[in-house]
Image (cartoon, rainbow, N blue to C red; front, top):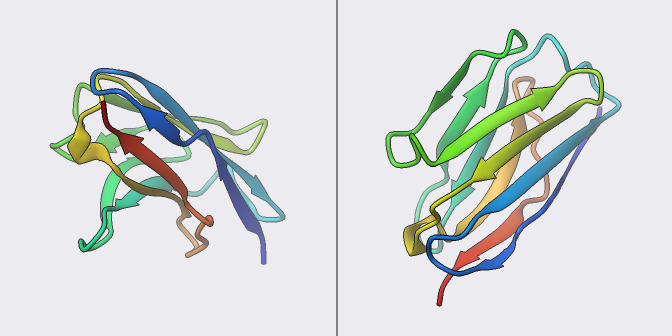
Length: 112
């Protein structure tokens, strides 16, 4: 069945940085796409970034140039480095495995 466990959320001022991490347990990891999604209050969940097993990445237009997704297939982890954060980035961030597994979510709040 597997499990995804996220960490690294918190409160940060506008312009600041955070790094989210997601660890995968009990599921085949290296050959599958991984993604980060986010859901702000009152809004639908939206795709933030994806990364293939071969390390090819894609980003939502709203985060291009500010966020970087990476993965370590030896450690079964996928990270999201978030720089130049804006209040509009405030949301619960979720890790997603291509086979349909979701993490529990981690809150990111950008406020002064």
